[in-house]
Amino acid sequence: MSSMEERDGVAAPGSSSAGMGVGAVGAAVEAVAGVAAMQEEVGIRREGPEPDPDEPPKKRVRVPEGESGKLEERLYSVLCCTVCLDLPKASVYQCTNGHLMCAGCFIHLLADSRLKEEQATCPNCRCEISKNLCCRNLAVEKAVSELPTECTFCIKQFPRSSLERHQKEECQDRVTQCKYKRIGCPWQGPFHELPAHESECCHPTKTGTELMGILGEMDQSHRRDMQLYNSIFGLLCYEKIGFTEVQFRPYRTDDFITRLYYETPRFTVLNQTWVLKARVNDSERNPNLSCKRTLSFQLILKSKVNSALECSFLLLKGPYDDVRIKPVIHHHSFCNDANETEYVPLPISDSVECNKLLAAKNINLRLFIFQVQK
Image 1 (tube, rainbow, N blue to C red):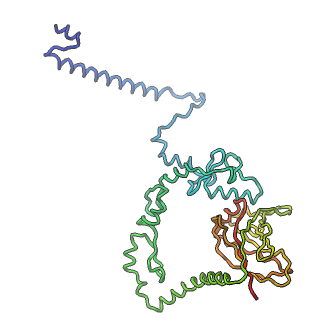
Image 2 (image 1 turned 45 degrees about the horizontal axis):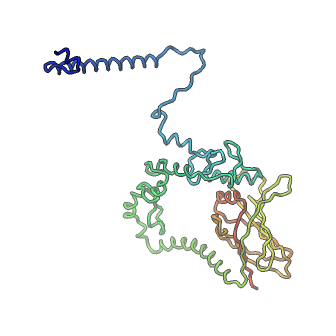
Image 3 (image 1 turned 90 degrees about the vertical axis):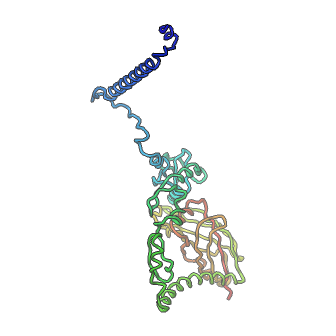
């Protein structure tokens, strides 16, 4: 009966636990033996015979992800700019073949091509690049903004999109200045030490004589700014005021070594015909080899005048450009013998702004001319 029950898969009441125990132990032993055999086989495969020096090199074995570094470190080499090999901080442009360039390098390449009178090309594939051919890669910009980076003050990691806010407002180790800086306190230190310093700062207890000397220096810088604004407000009171949008277009000289210069079409302001010219680095021979780049311009009167025409003029940024220009007022007395001003610097902030202007197809600015009444 028991043998029939065993055949049918039903164990006898007295021997059920023993039969199940023996079966489980046997299965465990077989499993352990199988794993050992597999490990031994893998070990043999891994060790294998010694390589023959005459054999050709085998293909590289793919390294597991854990051993190849973090994902962020691998993404850095994929998303970096092909020119400066650094992660972009703002806009990301790509050529027609998909190679990435940060905004600064992209503008610099276009500016260099304008100075050398060449077509700008991608440094990787040498395909043509321009503002019309290249486009922004918003996916890469978003991916780069989410990559972690270290705060320069507290060495903690944050997403790039929130790093600027952290360093300016939240980081307890960010460099800050004493609130009594305006009266001469030179202290600089981490933000978490600021309350302790301000409670012990000696500048609030300075005498009136000491404070007057500090305030005098502040008044001098403030007076220079106010002088400019007062001059502009004074010019706005003139009877004859004219302004127009001017467009500087690039040209080349006829010299053996051609030089880049800009010139506007003729325009009419105050019933007179004028032209503006501009040059790079004061017509330096190879401005593309210089890191510091500047623009200077001159105003030319094309009309014939019966008497001297005394004018004040200034250039400002156009309504659709984002270039930063600090207003500077220039004066000149125009006549038939002196119808050109000297070249004066275009008051842009730095070489980066100059490269933006050089990379553009044209330079669009706004000119104001004030005729001085005699």
